[in-house]
Length: 296
Figure 1: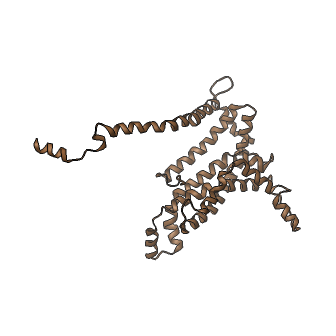
Figure 2 (figure 1 turned 90 degrees about the vertical axis):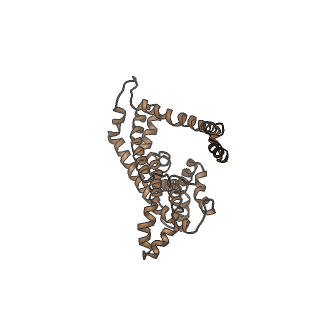
Figure 3 (figure 1 turned 60 degrees about the horizontal axis):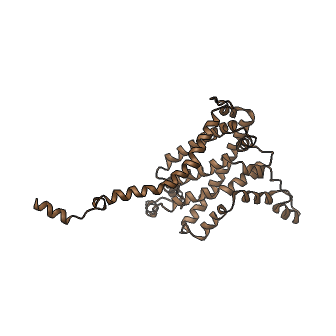
């Protein structure tokens, strides 16, 4: 007993052993998550419940799947197919532009608060609508580009109100969401692994294909998700840069809500939610540790 008492006096007690202070502190810190839980319930869970209710009911409050089946309407189906095509093209272009840029930033050993990185994220601080309207003024018939071309007696460009204008708007608005996740993963790759591959005789192409690209895959998948999903669901870019000539599925949903048809709009939104869930499943499979989703 004396030996045990001596050991108890010598062995320092952990914070959790001192009058339960550790467990009390943990219980107190749980209250810090209350504002986020309240925000999540009010702005995520409740709106989802409302969309589910309207998407699966009629005006007479009867359960139905007709709102979801309305996606099979030829007009809605054509809008969805066009939205998928433009979103795919925009995502590919963003990936082709973002990956080399992220590698350049990584090799230049610049920190996340460096000047060039700040320039990349600077447009994100501006209102999304204002950025899109700015491109409308640039691309329209009497815009900046055609004014310059006219001054030099060059042929004028008819880009506005075309799919090309929508793709350009998507790439401009969503490119930072592709650059930052890839850059965030590249800076975490251990340089010793790359040096070891070079010492073993791998050239630059082999090192990229077998070392850098596989390790940066979480950032690539995260970037693809963060670009493809908003491109698929957008209606502002197609409204401003596409005019009334090009209608995407986002425009169809926006029109349904504008005329007060919440049931049809919610049903089409549930269809788009399927694509979002698929993207989230792919992201969780290839980015289990959340490396690509962490921008900062």
